[in-house]
Image (cartoon, rainbow, N blue to C red; front, side, top):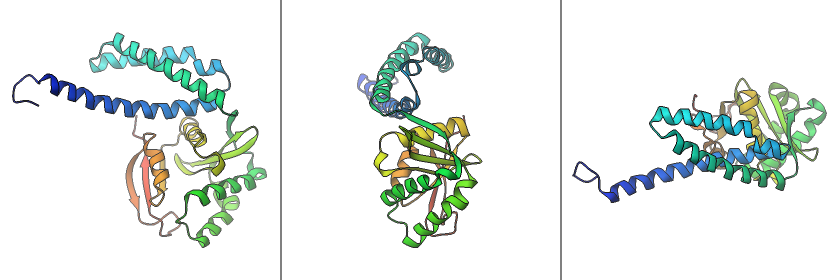
Length: 244
């Protein structure tokens, strides 16, 4: 800032530009959740959700008052933002095959989930030794799946991804490589946070894509382990959602 008590116009504009960068980053994070929601909703009315819109407006007007902002300005900005996101969500909803997130059907579909795991890990875990790959694959159906609450993502009746939660910790989230990048992972994550109370996850340090996925959705690093849960030399980065 200038040496004068009052900042210059250039300094004010620079400060606004910096804030704009932060706002756009937050909008990008919000967009990823909107896209995940669009994949989970069944019709246009569920996307438009007028009651939910008014609930959000009421909430942000209150937040505006708490933080010294004009509630009217915040309401106008949010109505424009929500309208744009609704159109985006409709595009996502209409452009994808219908997707459902449901509980697992149990052992009868474990073989399909193992196939998804195999496809996902082959595409993203090139650091995993073959003996460890085989060991984990052999334990999935008998030991790992029964130890978690499983949610399955399916499109047109075909499983394309799954997630498993135990005591608030996301123990597994895998998407078939053919469906990677289409919003399945985001939809599963949104589901387990909302429905299963998931707040924590640990990712392999050698898997920067997974780390970036969770960080971009609001998770923050809270620790590191040199070994994985089985005592193998695969360091873990521990992440958690901030407390609300």
